[in-house]
Length: 336
Image 1 (spheres, one colour):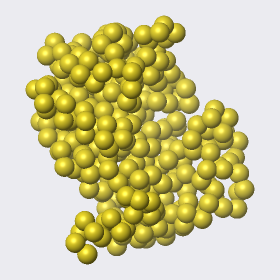
Image 2 (cartoon, helix red, strand yellow; image 1 turned 90 degrees about the vertical axis):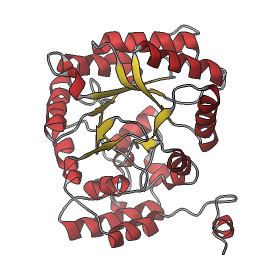
Image 3 (cartoon, helix red, strand yellow; image 1 turned 135 degrees about the vertical axis):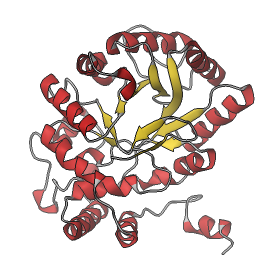
């Protein structure tokens, strides 16, 4: 696969990232290691993890694969924000929790630095200056090379960028939002901020928990046992059958089927490729619980959607926003 720079930084990353969230959970250690081998063989270098993935288990599974390999060939990204223990300070973006999280991640991963360190979500309880000065210190101390964010609203991302600039602190080079054909709202402000500020975009859930993989069909009437959507219903995750069983979803699935047939590939590959070819996007995160799943989805490396394909998928997935994200405001801003 190809590579590109991450935002306005000099850090080069592969066109697709690989996420570790399934490691030690849906994917056992042997399968996780096979998938890592395949991803690297296909030219990938950006590994995405977080301190809360399996409460650290994902890091430990990854570290045992990493041992004995050339560490600097990889770009290892992690995150901090969510609870990592039962203590009252084992959560959030305070100086105490951020520093403790970095040290714990480095121990689990068996490395002396993280290439990319991202705040996993906003923290209303911690002053933004406290978080940003702590992150800046981590870069200066050499424990972290670059900074990024995830799961923010547009104003939150802009505030982080502006405050860092005002205080002369290390800039954020990337943002990791949910972005897929069923989450077009990400375009309304978040991607506009990223484009304006030169922030690279590393989208998660390009298949929206399997809804865009071609596995689910109208006639099913419900999620099959053992599927990601069935697990979502049992665990209280967002991608439930009740939420997505509607004409909008099935219209997108129909269009994915049509475009996939033209290219002789799968709906999953088309859905992933649509994300990759969107403006501002740097590297969609591929996640898998089975080796065969990753092997199939990596075909997105070799598929190129046409402008007509992209336009058709755009129309099928379009969501009309309410004020001030409606067409009236768009037309006014364009001078129409």
